[in-house]
Image (cartoon, rainbow, N blue to C red):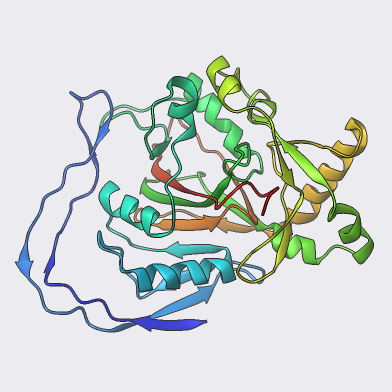
Length: 329
């Protein structure tokens, strides 16, 4: 797949990178604006270079900006429907550009950590151990341990009635060792199933439960448990744009509604093992400036872990809500 797009603009706004304000309680963005007369950008062909035999592409010839025309957003979404995961290297973005990209692809999803704990609605999650320019959380920090739940294979927000469609991560600081993210396609894994197995699972529903997964690594805030009750989803889902099917499992998947417990766990583990064979994994080694978007409907991912005592890691993430509860699609 290859396409081209010409973006015209009258001026450009140049931002510096995110910084931390030690005087503030949290993260803030400082933007340095330089408004200059600007000629139309040179026409570059947008190329999609495959990353893995099953899924994923590196995007060449596209630079993120705060204004994202609908036509360009549609090209990104078309590519996501085809490749399921897109890597945009060397992007000098900030939260404003990041959020503009998110909105161009659909309805932003509230961050589940703040929403679940306090009811506060914001749309960014901060991933990693950075506190400010001089300080970081170590391996024994409670949040570091809690976030180790991300080292299990999962799909983001499958514990919601309307789960995430896309996740968008941008890397600001990366560790010298570790801190990779591993991805697999449950669409490709579904295609590897026998016809008998497809017929068996096509009719089933799966229970996804936030407390079930996160309690395996740390205690769960009671407010989270109350806000994110277990939800049912179709085990087999169909992409409405291209008709391709995948199964929907991961660490949040607690059981199969039509099967007793032991049999349900056996099936979930079988499907998970089938989709996460060594040859099926794309490992993304993050570089500063990487923006990565993936389709949570058919992609599982997990972190590889890193030494938080030794290294700093900082990413910002947004998510795009799905288009409805998949039991009713």
